[in-house]
Amino acid sequence: MAKEKDQIKMKHNSAKGTKNHHMVAETDGHNKSLDEINGSIEVPQNAGPWKTFLAYLGPGVLVSVGYMDPGNWITSISGGAQFKYKLIFVILLSSLIAMLLQAMAARLGIVTGRDLAQLTRERTSKVGGIILFIITELAIMATDVAEIIGSGIALELLFGFPLIVGIIITAFDVLLLLLLMKLGFRKIEAIVATLVAVILFVFLYEVVLSRPDIPGIFAGFVPHKDLVTNQSMLYLGLGIVGATVMPHNLYLGSSISQTRNFDRDDEKSVRSALRYTVADSNMQLTVAFVVNCLLLILGASLFFGTNSELGRFVDLYNALGNSKIVGAIASPVLSMLFAIALLSSGQSSTITGTLSGQIIMEGFIRLKMPLWAQRLLTRLISITPVLAFAIYYHGDEEKIEGMLTFSQVFLSVALPFAMIPLIIFTSSKAIMGPFANKMWVKICAWTSAIVLVILNIWLIATTLGIM
Image 1: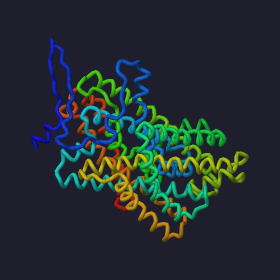
Image 2: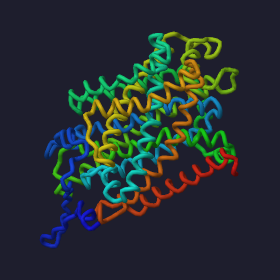
Image 3: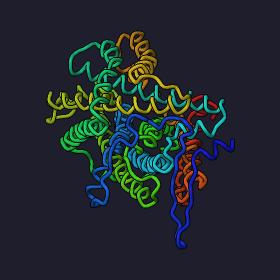
């Protein structure tokens, strides 16, 4: 136990009355988090703020992808279709919580040189570590469900593949990731940023054409009592939280924040790394927030109050080309843009999902596998229930997409199991030294965790008829 506590030390040296804090991450023989890319990107020394920020720009976009993956699409579009703009407040709240948690995750990785999975495994019992590993792996699988279904439907819409065939094809996207990994981490960041830009501009263009109710949108940022009293709205609201603040992203953020190479023994360098990394994260998460709002607004503009089906992927694709539903803006080009954005979302999420899976597997159970084997294994495990479901329902998109909302609610239930260790670690001065959470951060973080746990218990109880 004492050995574990000594694995990460904060050495305080005094000189002429001034204290300099030097962070030394002792790996105790274990590999660094994502060893092949850890510290692989150089940060210019004595450069201006803009050039330094550009060096740190990148990890935030990988983190933000998880906040706008296909799981977000179905919950946000459905939220707009069923409740118009009332759930925009949930997107705002979720995004603010995400910014807080991702900043904490980045600080944990930069200060300690360890990721959340490694620290959790080191500071829990063997049984506790296994339980947390299982929960986290299930969360990864739930995330994969969204990617698989989204990518499969996009392939069906773009190329006419039967949905079952499209789902099978997604099992081999591991080859895409392996190719990208050979290009270097900086190239991966640039490719993902391009995919995110495609998603943003497609939906911005389509929302502008849909002419939404602007006053109604702003009114949606005010919380509505139905969020608590309406079980359907609560269920979908938690789905949005689960889709927005996903547990695997906290592990990812704590790891890829370590990809920049700077002087970890110099407090000034560490503070600079924290400042630029958090700025990058918040900027990219703001983009994710805008995308999620656009999705909900588009669902409300096209589906709320109509006799059409709920805002599913295929529904929205068809609606964008149907003048009877969306009016004069209908165009096959808009439908095609939607499908391209959906495929971009699914594939960019694949990259971050793979990295998260590697972090969790190596951190919790210290099992190192070739990347292709690890990705193929987790993908096959995730694809099996989706494929079985698709075969059972003969490729019925509506039935299959119903799995998406459930998977996102599960992510919301799993989130506290990542949130709570993160809050504990980043609040500990023994671990973080002078970089431990300030009081206001602790209050906000613990309040978010407690409220989320209460809402999850309420949701489960009402669903089971206990309350």
